Amino acid sequence: TTILGLETSCDETAAAVVQRDAQGGAKILSNIVRSQFDEHKAFGGVVPEIAARSHVQYMDHIVAQALDAAELGFDDLDGIAATAGPGLIGGVLVGLTSAKAMAYAHDLPLLAINHLEGHALTPRLTDGLEFPYLLLLVSGGHSQFVLVKGVGDYERWGSTIDDALGEAFDKVAKMLGLGMPGGPQVEQWAQKGDPKRFVFPKPLLKEKRLDFSFSGLKTAVRLAAEKEAPLSDQDVADICASFQATILKILDNRCRLALARFQAEFSEHQPRFVVAGGVAANKAIGQLLKDLAVEYDAEMVVPPIKLCTDNGAMIAWAGIERFNLGERDGPDFQARPRWPLDDADMALATKGD
Ligand code: ATP
Ligand code: MG
Ligand code: FE
Image (cartoon, rainbow, N blue to C red; front, side, top):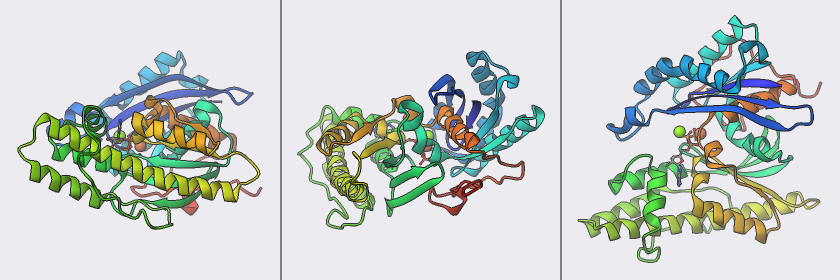
């Protein structure tokens, strides 16, 4: 099965060709990502209107590049997959509409993919991980624990009640006058700082439910930055290090709860634990999760950075998984700005046949 996948839900225009062989092995034949970083830089955040226009401008070119790099033509494809939500609606419309047009023109099936499902199934693309597994999805727009039981079969165990983790990193970076995107900047500065200098709050930690809250932490960081102003480089590094250390403590606590729950519900096998979404690119967070996996004797997958942040390969792969289960979407499929993973619409139409 060979599928072209398009991703346009935020600020990267991406297209990739992924192939699955008869044995179930996956091969990424191409994975082209064009970041709109420079177009949004001056505004301190992603401007939806600019994002949508830029996707329109580059989509055809990125698709051509992806097919070129894969050394394939439309005739070699089995289908076209595109992110249909959740995300910035203008961008999602560009990708989904392009996919519909190409599918129609080349008489190929269309797969309308949930962007979060793309992130969630990535460990199967990279490592062929089996269901069920515990997923920590931490990205720019989402922070949640999800039990992944099968394609389209997701159970949300907890989510953030305010900011997403990536968003918290981005906002802290902005407060400190660091560049965009914030996550990698905060991580770099944190390496030079003292993680013990500031003590920040860890909301919800006493609660047994698996939710997150990052907005109080963000406020505490802002207050500390205001109190220490004007900030020296060392102050900035210390704030970043203390912020990241607090995040690590929160994640450590929450992941222990989630792993214990997974162990209790699936006592018959070794826990499987994966992390997905852009924040998974953070090395300190990756190391913490790896250590936890060892402690809980869990099979652990951290996909390579390129496949953690937004990309077309994860969309193509989700398309392959759905295609092989008999799923097809029609040209009437509507783009969705909001579309939770555990939505009833995620279930396979063919289920129970
Ligand atoms: P969603 O997937 O929820 O729709 P998104 O697509 O914008 O949101 P991703 O592209 O998956 O999110 O991830 C981007 C986020 O990851 C940004 O908030 C960014 O700051 C964060 N991030 C990237 N690298 C790092 C890092 N090294 N440390 C911390 N955060 C990081
Ligand atoms: Mg992004
Ligand atoms: Fe994403």
